[in-house]
Amino acid sequence: MARSRRVPLLLVLALALGGVATASSLVKSTNTPPSPGSLTNSKNAESTALYCTGLTDSRHHAPGHVTFLNTSDSARSLDVQVVSNTAKRASKTIELPAYGSLAIQPQSFVSGNYFAVAVQVSGGGVVAEEVANGGLTQTPCTSAGVTDWYGAGFNTSVGSSAILNIYNPTATPAVFNASVYGPGGFSAPAPFQGMAVGAHSLLALNLGAQIVNTDNVGVHVKVLRGSIDIVGTQATNLVTSFNAGSPQMSKTLWFPRVTTVTGALAQLRVFNMSSQPADVTANVSLGNFKIAPESVTVAPYDSGVVVITPNSAIPAAGYAAVKLTSNEPIAAALATGTTAGLALAAPVDASNEFIISDFSGQGFDAATLTNTSKSSIKVTFTVVGSAAAATASTQLNGSTTTDLLGVFSGLSTLKGQTLMITSSRPTLVVSTTLPSKPAGITVVNPLERR
View 1 (tube, rainbow, N blue to C red):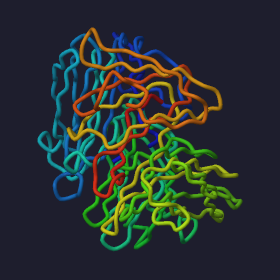
View 2: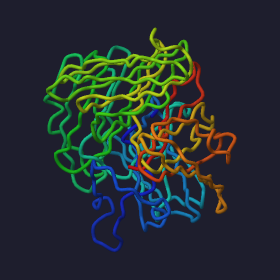
View 3: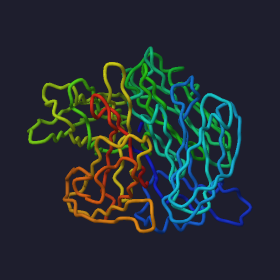
C-alpha cells in the first residue's frame, strides 16, 4: 500500500543527451520539494527516469508487478533494467503507446528475493506504480533518490517482517547509516552503520535482524554518499503493505480519510527524533460530530500511537479527516486493518499535481481533496485517455476536505479511469482508499509530484 514521500509525478529529472556520462549518473537528488511546475512542460521533457523497489518473489510477501502509464499523446520508448538483491540483472526495451499502459513482473526477468526496476523514458508523461497483493498493496515509483528517509510504524514482532528495500539509482556506490527509534528508545546497530549499496544495485535490509520482536519502530536512513530510493515492505500475518516513508520530518501532517467503522483498526504511528518531548495532537473532523482533540506526548527518541479506531471518544461513523500537529518535527504513518494485521501508509505531502488511476481494477471506495491552506485554491481535473480529454475546474475553500466526485461532474465513477488533478498552489492533498471490508482499511496513495 501505500503517503509521503511519495511520489514525484511527471516533472522527473532532466537527463542530458549526447554526454559521456550515463543517464543515471546525472541524477540530482534532493530532499527539498520542487518548485511548482507544469504537467505539460514535463510531458515535453527529452528524457525522464523512474525507479521502483519493494516487490518480492512469491515467498517474501509482496510478489506483483510494475504498471507503466503513458499520460501523453505520443508514444514512448522505455529502457527497463531489473535487478535483484542477489545481483542478477536483465534489461529490455518496451514501446508504450500514447495513453497506453502495460505491466511487467520483475521476478519473470531475474531470480532473487527482492527486486528493483529502473526505467529511462524517451520523453515525459510516463508514471509507474508498483502493485502487489492482488492490487491491494500499491506504491508509486519515484524519479530520483533521496539523502534522508523516515519511515514510521514498522513491526518486527513474531509473525511480522519489516524489510527496507534500498536501491541505488546512480553510477557510483552509495553509503548510508540506519537508526531506529521505538519503545526501547534510540538504537544505531553497528551492522546498520556505513552500509554500502553498489551502483544500480539493490540491498534488502531486514530490520528484524537487529531490532527483535518490537512493534511501532521508526527508522531514519541518512545517506552519507550518493542517493538511494527506499520502500519498506511490511508483512504482519497475512497483511502486506508498502511504506513509502517521507524525505523529511514535519510538524503538521494530513490524513484526510481515516476509517472509524466498526470492526476496523486505525492508528497514527509517530516517532520523535528530537532531544525534547513531542506533544502530538490529532484534530479529528467527522461529519457533524464535535470531537475533542486526541493527544499523546512522545518521549525523546521514542515512538508513540494515537488511536483513532476503536476509540470511545470517536463515533463509528465512516471516514474522519485527521490533522496531526506537533511542537517538534515528527514522522508518521497511518496503520489500518483488523485484528488479523495492520497495513502501513505514509502521509501524502501537499502538492499541486496528482494522478489517480485505477491500478487495482476495483475502483475506489473514497477519493477526497484537501486544501491544507487557509485560502481557497483552484483545482483542475483532466480525464486522461484521449487528445480531447474532459477538463473542468472548481474552487476549493481553505482548510476543507471534500469528496472528489462531489465537485467533479465529469465522471460518475473512478473505476477504470485515470484522472489528473492540478491546483493553483501546492497546498492540495489527495487521498484514496480501495473497496474493503471493513471499509477504509486499504489506503493507497495517489501519484504525486514532489
